[in-house]
Length: 443
Ligand SMILES: *[C@@H]1O[C@H](CO)[C@@H](O)[C@H](O)[C@H]1NC(C)=O
Ligand SMILES: *[C@@H]1O[C@H](CO)[C@@H](O)[C@H](O)[C@H]1NC(C)=O
Ligand SMILES: *[C@@H]1O[C@H](CO)[C@@H](O)[C@H](O)[C@H]1NC(C)=O
Ligand SMILES: *[C@@H]1O[C@H](CO)[C@@H](O)[C@H](O)[C@H]1NC(C)=O
Ligand SMILES: *[C@@H]1O[C@H](CO)[C@@H](O)[C@H](O)[C@H]1NC(C)=O
Ligand SMILES: *[C@@H]1O[C@H](CO)[C@@H](O)[C@H](O)[C@H]1NC(C)=O
Ligand SMILES: *[C@@H]1O[C@H](CO)[C@@H](O)[C@H](O)[C@H]1NC(C)=O
Ligand SMILES: *[C@@H]1O[C@H](CO)[C@@H](O)[C@H](O)[C@H]1NC(C)=O
Ligand SMILES: *[C@@H]1O[C@H](CO)[C@@H](O)[C@H](O)[C@H]1NC(C)=O
Ligand SMILES: *[C@@H]1O[C@H](CO)[C@@H](O)[C@H](O)[C@H]1NC(C)=O
Ligand SMILES: *[C@@H]1O[C@H](CO)[C@@H](O)[C@H](O)[C@H]1NC(C)=O
Image 1 (cartoon, rainbow, N blue to C red):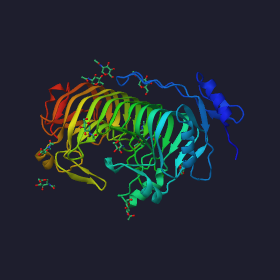
Image 2 (cartoon, protein in one colour):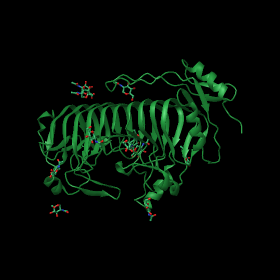
Image 3 (cartoon, rainbow, N blue to C red):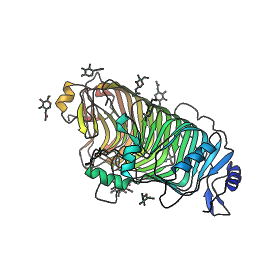
Image 4 (cartoon, protein in one colour):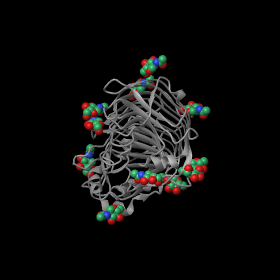
């Protein structure tokens, strides 16, 4: 088998690329990517991006082809290029066995080819990495320090979601892996990758800090009658100082979701379509657990054809079974200092939704058992556009458990209209005097 980019040519190219953009290897006609200079823009998470020294060695990986498992020699390449190298992935790889990459230190990954996860449902059901949080599963996990994973606008990560969505339609207990899990990554970037067809969420960023995600394209489309399931763009969990920016997302569930203990997060320059919004939560799912979402800035985003644009969802103070693999309620904690600013809403069912009764259809029970999560210091600034006809003439809903659980909620310069041109807001159980210009109606 011919190695498309030899180690020597890759090193030479990487050296010249320290300053230049992507170039083509003249010998093989293949693109070798250089690390892009990804900076948070215009806002950062309140902390400078950590320094990431240039890499000094390269490890190209030859794909076995024919759907054979490339995981073992991918793992070898990561060991070989750990501590200062670039793993060069310029072919079409298959991952058919679980891959633990949480030992990384100062590594770049240059993906100009593709990574496809073999849809072997029996294998992954038994062997995917398992997390307690929302019974999550992972094909692979990346963690450590100082990792830059870039696709230069051409690299692809393919979760092979279709067979999983089809199987899920027949078995709603099927636990499906997340396409990319960052678990304990401190310092790094993920950029320029086209992610397609996740069996479950696209990305989970857990136990991580100082990570920037930029210039991504996320696409989830079903080719059968069975819908795409979940497909959250990015979920952050137990993570601090994360920036997600300049990306296009086409999915069917949250575009971005801030799960328990997400702090100092910036989301900017996203264009989301078909989702459930840029969402805080759900939180308060686990009795006895304390969830914090604090210092979140969601700036300059567009949301189209979604159930919600800006959303905050927390469980009530009583447990319920919402879906076969989603039950909870009774957990405590707080949501504090969250700003949504410059947000365009196009044809979303709700422009803003604040809900303290998530997962419970019986409002009487929510009134009897108010949420144990407080929501405070929330700002909605400069939102414009339209909602869908679903709740016309209503354009938003902010319903709390009680004024003790929701306070200091502000809205300013919001001009979102329903198809009939009216803009009614459902707002109840909290002090609504901070909502400038809202025409509040009862639910
Ligand atoms: C993703 O992989 C599946 C096979 O698992 C293939 O059928 C599909 O075409 C791939 N999608 C893309 C966009 O490459
Ligand atoms: C459904 O999926 C679950 C979880 O993988 C599995 O335990 C169960 O056996 C499956 N049920 C059927 C009918 O295949
Ligand atoms: C995060 O860290 C905790 C504690 O080390 C660990 O139990 C968990 O598996 C990690 N990952 C996720 C996704 O929760
Ligand atoms: C808003 O985001 C878009 C990318 O979606 C970017 O081109 C534009 O410069 C951003 N505007 C501001 C004011 O940050
Ligand atoms: C956007 O989402 C809507 C609703 O899910 C879908 O019908 C449409 O095809 C999506 N647009 C694109 C460009 O994929
Ligand atoms: C969140 O952080 C708080 C404060 O450090 C801690 O008490 C709580 O257990 C954490 N919750 C989760 C879900 O990690
Ligand atoms: C509130 O969060 C923003 C980021 O959205 C941050 O700049 C600001 O310092 C936070 N305020 C407080 C009081 O922590
Ligand atoms: C929203 O959905 C409509 C109808 O499916 C579609 O024409 C439009 O392109 C979608 N918007 C985006 C941004 O994809
Ligand atoms: C809702 O909960 C209340 C209080 O437990 C109960 O009386 C009522 O029957 C429930 N309603 C429905 C529709 O289940
Ligand atoms: C949670 O809420 C329930 C019902 O309101 C209450 O009985 C319980 O004391 C609360 N627990 C905590 C830890 O706040
Ligand atoms: C209100 O928001 C619109 C849309 O972002 C913006 O053009 C306008 O300048 C804002 N007005 C004020 C008074 O801030």
